[in-house]
Length: 507
Image 1: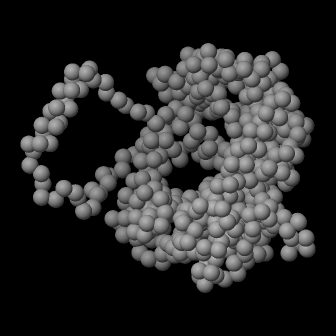
Image 2: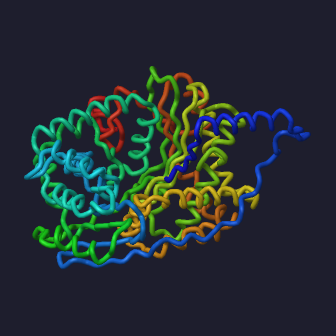
């Protein structure tokens, strides 16, 4: 996001401050100091972004370039088309660790040398993994792109994975998990993923668990890199003040001799979801309470499977989620925070991944109101599917989406990220310039129908992490078949969430 500021000399600033104060003192105040309702949003403006151009190298590496003539910066992102969804069942977190470690030393550079070289260029080098991708990203002045991309190619292709770096990251990850798993909100999200996706690829923790991280060895990381970091499984996206032909030549020089290992990659198993009477899950929906007596608040989540990124309902889903829980003015925040004062904030999200991702509606509240808030979340999702949606409410929610979209693509890095995700999902680049019109085409009836067909609360799961004694009786009055799991007996490595010690019979 670009931030614009205006510098004034002290005397000018003092003069303007005095003038403003004078104006306030001597300007008559209107009869009503506040509007009863905010002004309607202005008509949307069509967005036009540079059209990417691309080539594919003989080894299968797809190279995409976005020219922004005159832009001072350039961003190069190497995207590997697999992430946490390919973690082996017992090694949750290995994709994340692999991606994080590629920048921590190569055959010819130590981690400090890499950091110093990037810093000398005035750039920034980052790496990490999401569910469907692993990335290495460098951001630098356009005139220094050649040197920066040489470093990017080195770390992505030839990481050393030194034992001391693996051990250091393992300990850092374990320390982070020890803190995160004490937070009701973090814990509730991990439990919700297991409830919705079970033991299928999206069910485990992307960051791993203390047990899985402790099991990950250097050999596991090397195996992950050898299998998935290959040119026919990668996309290189470069954008900014660059010339496309120059970038294609540079990519050929740096990546043209990158060889694919023998064999082809096997497809990732499809997500198995728990949405009530779902044949792939063969389960009923669940209401799960993780009893954490020391919790200062209860984290409440309503969760179910949502959509994938190629779903024909994608834009209807975006708008529906914006109405329900995107931002301060959305319904969940209005009902739970503003009207009832039960939380500092409530929101929803639809994570449209390569395969079906999760839909969640969530908030945190005092323990005593955990059951009440769960019922409100369910009720608001149901109201979205049953009640008419006025244009006066719909228009501002669509403007929120298009405004966020425009701001996210203001920077070169934001534009490169968006194009890289389109490439990952196999979508056309023309979607960049059709985003605003696609959002504006969604009607209130579209939202209602989508919510009724795709967000059916009868197939939603409820997860609460908190002090169960404060809300369990009320919860059982509102929801049937409540499961209570003591936090000390919770096992995030298992689809049923219960440790073998706590549940020796496997029930």
